[in-house]
Structure formats: structure tokens, C-alpha cells
Image (cartoon, rainbow, N blue to C red; front, side):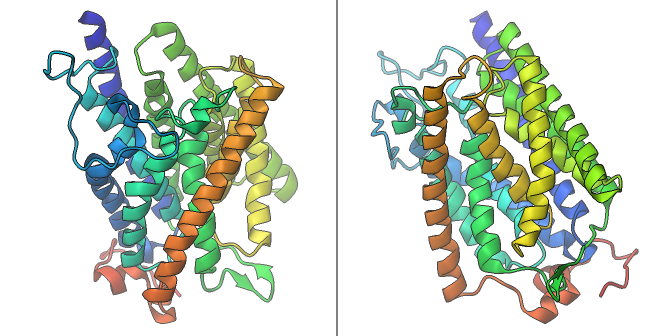
Length: 413
């Protein structure tokens, strides 16, 4: 009972840290975009976490984790509406159903992860997507697509049943790439912001508050202690400590290498590239944080830092407008971190690398198809993009009738 209590307290602390990450996402997004869209971005982030938790309780948790009900098909979880914990052999409530922490703590911890996928999309489509279609997309993606995808591994589904099981410790693919693929599809269907590309040339659209963006990244780094540390699913000291060390070293390495590479290429000390390098390192280590040595973590994070710099440039060259770099951070580094499990650490082998490739390809096919169906349908039925006047004057005024900074309004064009 004492061990259960210790594990449960640790998991609840990690749940709080992952919840805190949503503030980090919000600050990062508003910092890297223009002030006239601040309320819109904050509204979307609050909508995602509140509605996401409700959806996860009503349908998502049972879809994602059908094994406790002894009904894992391998591809689709249980369509059971509502949240109820399993009973033990005596027919009484079994809160310690997994012998590590309570059922309710498990639900809340996993629910915090569920909302993250839609938050990734929020940053990529910032400043030009209508709020209502985004809300509809969030309901469908968080309520159904993410849990089904998650069940393929974490719910004991077909990727977990491969001869060499696909491995994703805390969600480089299951969380970050699931959001990243949808972000890529959304950006393609939505188009670039007005003024982003002129006469074939890329035009920088600076964020309005880099200090807020910096605070957001530091909050996200702190939250990753819960994101990865909680994914140990216990307070076991040696493994938990290792996970926190590899997580931090990958973040530091990603940031430093991204800063160095971007400075060499562009001859300026770009803070935003430094910040995205940190996030890229965090995303990359997330798939194998419990399997890596400190040296492995530094290498994985460093490679992620290099990828960030070139991915941001490549995405711009494709005329894809991602205001916060979500695709580069969450998709590109998520794929890299997932494949790195087969290259570095305790599981490294040809068979493991092949399983990681199968996992990446499976999630790519499913997430691209489902997000395209949802967003394309919304585009054809109700439209997904605000009109030119609304975009130029700001979504805060037109969709919310509010101003984030009423006493410090800047004349923006």
C-alpha cells in the first residue's frame, strides 16, 4: 500500500506538470504570432484542454485502452461511453487495477496527453483559420482519431503485437507526430498568411512578444519532467532519474546545436531557432528516454537541433506557412526520435529499426487520411479560412470582439 501511495503521488505530480505544459504551448504560440490574434490563440488553447478532457472521459479513454476490459482487437478500442473503473474478482471497485497507481490517476495523466495533439495543430494554423471549424476538428481528432491511434501501441494493439514490438516510450510518434501530420495537412489546405510569400520570396512575419515565447519554452521543458518522467508509470528511482537526465540533456543539446548551425548558416544569433532546437531535442528523446544513455541523449538531441534548422528552411521553401515551427519540431523531430530507438540505446537493432519504420508509416497513413477527410470536408462545407479583411485586422476583433492589449494597441498593418 505504501508503494502504491508513493507511485500514485508521483503520477499526480507528473499529471500537474503535463497540465502546466498547456500554459507553455499558449505562451509560445502567442509570443511567435502577432498581437492582433492573441485572444484567438488563447481561446483555442483553453478550448482544447477543457473539451479534450471531457471527450477523453466520455469516449477517448476506452477507445485507447481497451485491454483493461479484456477486449483488445489490435486496431480499434472499445466504444464504451462514459468513464467507469474496472471491478476486481469480488465485484468491488479496484482502484489499484494495475498495481502501480489508481485508475483515476491513470485517466487524468493520459487525458493530459490527449489534448496535446490538437495544440500542435493550433500553432501551425494560427492567424488565419476560422475558430468554429478548428473546434470541430479538435472534437473529432482528440475524441476519436488520437485514441484509436494511441491504442495501436499503448492500448496493446497491433504495433505492440509485432514480433519486435514498436516502441514509443512517451509519444514522439503517438503524440507529437500524430499532431504533426494533422498540422501538415491543415497548413497545406489552409494556405499561407497574407504577406508571407511575395514574388516568390519568403517574408518574415515576426512574433510580437519573444519574452513570452521564451517563457513558454522554459515552461514546456519543465512540463517534460512530467511528460517523460510520468511515463515510467511508477516512482522507481533509478529509471525515473535516468529519464529526467536523458530528457534534459537532449533538450540542452538540441538548443545549442540549433543555435550554432543557424548562426553559421544565417550569420545571426536567432533566439527563436535556439528555442525550437530545445523543443526538437525534447520531442526526439521522448520515444526512447528510458532506453538511452546520457551520451545517446546528447547525440539524439543534437541531431534534432540540426534537423530543426534545415526543416524550418525546407518548409518555407515549399511555401508552407507554419508560424511557430510546429511541423519541424513535432513531426520531423518526432519521426527522428522514433527511428532513433532502433539506432541508439538498449533496443538498437535492425529488427527494431524496421518496427519503428512500420510504426511511423502506419501513423503517417492514418493521420494524413483522417485529418485530410476532416479538414477538407470542413473546407468544402463551411470554409476554414477567414476573409482578407478579418485576417488583416486580426481575429481577436472579428471572432471575439476583444483586444488582448487594449491599453497598448499597436498600429499593425
